Length: 272
Image (cartoon, rainbow, N blue to C red):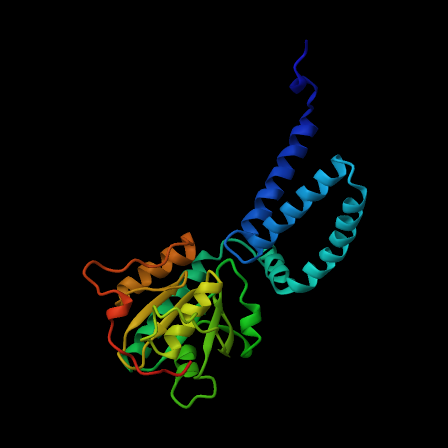
């Protein structure tokens, strides 16, 4: 008896390979974002719909079919920023690591200089989750990341000093943005507004959020809803390279012997 695989042609293998590749790429676009939960919900909905058809449940099948048609258009409208961001990432040229590396160096140096002068700063680096909805709360820009430009944005009494800056690759896309404050569970209640805004954004997205404290002159990274330890310039550069290029989902680790967030010194409220 011939094997079923014997009937497969080279064209069939190519077809299966391409479909598998496209499904994998679609999964990589949504994994780690809020859209992944929607995808899971769609899969559950589709499973119930198929089961209803197989069991001959005509009324339920009809209702689910109609709801699916309406829901598809609703999802397109609801997730328009995410879809636009996904298409931008698909069409974005590869091999930008060199320019991205230079941008990270400028980001680290700018944060160092701001921290030395005790000038508060809040910078979000976009990774997989699009930050378009938060960029829309500020002033849209399209500028190359540079140390003087970032220093000018956060200079005291500058028009865009209050709020956050959003960086996408080697470019600053928005400034003066409003970030959501960290949920009031009490973990970081001792921190000022700037720190809680950084933690809040990192809770809802996978962005790497940099903070320079105007009270202590320290530099920190917020990721995954957690605030990392104080960093020096070398540590900041190393973590940025790891977090932006390798994109791990775990937040920065606390150094050995460092006090937990609850026992940190009380920080007066900072402007976001």
